[in-house]
Image (cartoon, rainbow, N blue to C red; front, side, top):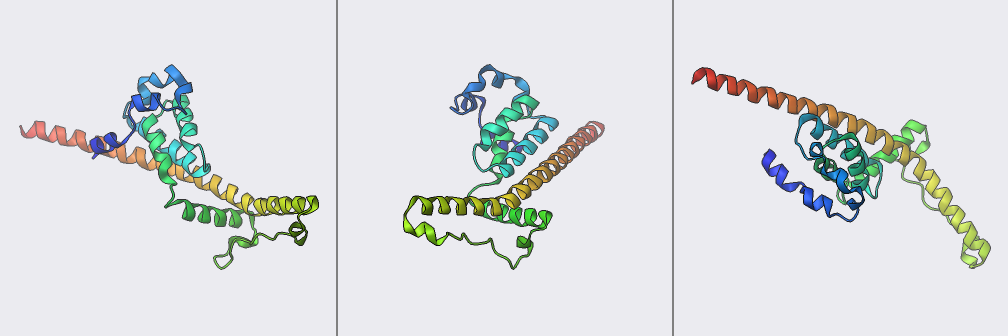
Length: 191
């Protein structure tokens, strides 16, 4: 299964040729960035999940930069940003909005409530400069109404999921190594 997973991950050559990551140059050649160790994989997963949940754009360059700084597994960090994709984007952001509303104590936290609709002032229909200014202010106010709970929820979700993935993956990989060692010892004793 791990060999199949390794085939799906980007190769060192493809990452070096990526136009978004080319600026890193020789830093990407460090061997620890490509080694599949327990700590490297766990850190790469946590970094990728963190940036995948926290920011909607440029997730891969941010996760790659932090993976290089922390010497985490680079392909795993880049691939795990895909936790948010067109299929999971809606539910993750909906849940993050409600989590942020609940944490901030805002009224949009109940399941029956919807995201408040955008209210454009009547002066915006006039087509004047004042109408344009009013509509821009209405959109800005709407973004701050929805954005604050969303940002808080995404930050909480990113930190908690990143830490949980790090601990769980580290524990699973340590268990796997112990099991493999026990099987080798048993096979030597029986042989």
